[in-house]
Length: 400
Image (cartoon, rainbow, N blue to C red; front, top):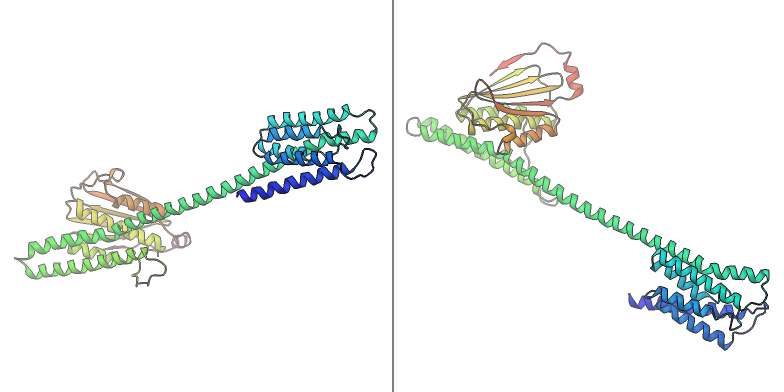
C-alpha cells in the first residue's frame, strides 16, 4: 500500500511542478519566455509541499497559498497553472476535512491570492480582471470536485457495506433454515417412531401376561412386537436418510403413509389391547399428499397418546367428509391424564398442531365433560374436487 502511495504522490508533485513551469512561460505582455531561476525555485518548493497534503491538508493549503502569493512579486503571470500546487491542495482539503473548515480555508486562500495579485498590479485591464477571476475560482472549483469525489467514495463504501451485510444476512438465514430443518426432522422422527415403540411396549406387556396361561397368544404378541419394531426401524432409517448428502448413495424409500394405511395402523393398536373402531361420514375424497400424511399422523399420534396416557379400553376414530373439509375426531373412554393442548409438556400434540396449521387446517384437544379425551382436526380438501363432491350421492356410513 505504501509504495503505491509514494508513486501516486510523486506523480502529483511532478504534475504540479510541470504545470507551474508551463504557467511561468507566459509573460505579462502575452509573450513566451523561458522560465527564470526564480520560476524553477518557486515551482520546486511549492510542488514539494504538496507531499504533506494528506497528513496536514490545512497547513499544506496555507503553504501553497503563501507560495502562490509570491507569483506576482516575482514578475510571473498569475494563472491557475502557476497556482497549481494551491489548486491541488484545495482538492485534497475538500476531501479530507469537514465542510466548515474547508469553506473557511478555501475562501481565505482565494482571497489572499486575489489580494496579493491586486497589490502588485498598477492598472487592471479587462483581461487582467478575467485572469483574477480564474485565479480566485480555480481553488474553489477544485474543492467542489474534491467534495464530489468524497461523496462518491462514501457512496461506494456504503454500497460495499450493504453488500457485506446482505451476505452476512444470507449466511444467517441459511444457518437458521438448517436449524429449523433439524428441528423438523427431530419431530418427524418422533412422529414416525414414538407410536411404534409404545405399541411394542404394550404388545410385550400383553405377551408377558399371557406367557404362562396362553402361550399361543403370547407368541402371537411377540411376533407383533417383532413386526412393530421392524417397521419402526424402517421408518427411522428412511427419515434419517433425509440427512444424507446429495452425493451419498440413495437407499430405497417407502411411500409416505396416508389414510389408506389407517386399517393397518388400527389393527396394530387392537393387537396391543386397545379396542378401536372407525366411522366414515360422507364420501371420501383423495387428499393431497401433505394433507393425507397429516391426517394419518393425527390419528397415529392421538391413539399413541391414548395408549400412553389414558386408562382407556376403547377409542373411536371418526372421519367426516364435508364440501371443503375433512374432520377427524379421536375419542377415548378412559380417565384421561392428558394435559390440555396449550399446556402439553410433550411435543406430540404441539407437532400435530404445527402440521395441521402448515396445510391450512386446525387442531384442538382436551378432556370431554362426559369423560375421556378428544382430539379434533379439520383439514382442507382440494377446492375443485370438493366442489365436484357437492353434487354427489347420499353419504354412506361404514362401521368397523
